Length: 511
Image (cartoon, rainbow, N blue to C red; front, top):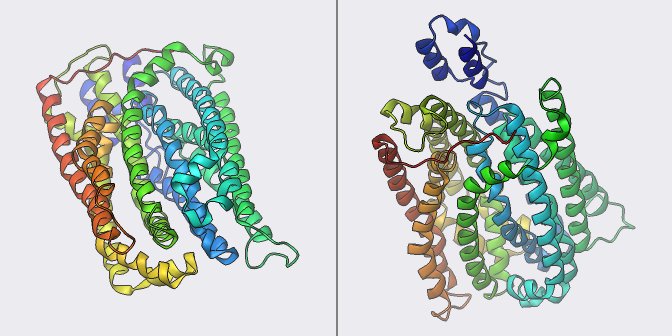
């Protein structure tokens, strides 16, 4: 009965209840299901994640609109914040993305161990974020020469120096958000997002919006300072919320709270074992992306601004459902994987999974795949035939030329993002189970397709007039190719797991 109780406490999903009933007859009455909208359930987590991703997407759109009203020529400068964020993604998608395998395993690990791993992650991420912030601040001139159009390069240096310290806060936020999702606390990432967005709205309205006091004369640097302040407030709110939550959860733990909150070598080793693959994947992918961005920037201010506006529209409000479903999928695939590992044996290096086991592990990703397919098709039809992209681009850039270029970009590759949305859900199966397979699929698309194009665009002799002829094949084509590669790798992963040839790392308790 004790073993049954341990497993019951470790899971909330209906198919796991069936497994418990088979293993221990009469144990089903021990299971108390929270309602579907509860944060510990798949659909409930989606609700939390939608709001979490929606708030910063709204602000990201508004911030460009404010800057366009201040000085339309400086809209491309605000993209330097985005490109700093791309560098930061390498550390934010490294160890933090490995937590879904480690912290997400609620069947084989105690709550003390999972929380200790989270604290260890936060310590490491804070150090890495601070180091990266200092590097960006010191290398502002070199950064501007690569990622800011020559027309606004000199005026952008202060903006870059201010924005560089956002890396520190984004590192903390990424660590807290990923780990707490794996702990079934999506309300903490929501608190980060809500705090940052609320402070942003207040300061934007007071200092840079069209309804500000007439005595205030904002610049693009005002927007950078506001954004840095709000990122800091969000990170601090999330950190405090997590500390309070963890202390409450461990109030009756046999291990002292001081031991749980200290960094632990075993915890770090478990994180690195999973995170080294996601770190490498992110480093390769973002290095190639920034290589392409430097080529886009060299095409001039209008073209660079149009790409920034296109990215704001595509990666802003429209991408919220994709991001929310991905976050829920990777969380619950991690839970399912942990439950299967507990059944197979946490120290077993190779175990054979049945087809039903594989289906249960991948079930959250299958659900997300079906939902995102319907959503993306609907959005594509609506946006393709309403003609609203050009008007939206004009509001964001305050430039008719930029809006025309943005509309051209949208019409040529928007359909490719349907494949991206589906690929993202399929990849969560690899990310939350065996991240080395996640690395394999990413290297496949980036080395075989993106890298040759990165080299080619530097040799073609492109101009602003013909650049999109090539860039659409780079960005749109990579999304379609990635879909095929992820599908192939998912199938191979399943066959390897079914045959018992897939090697798995042993599970170690940090406390």
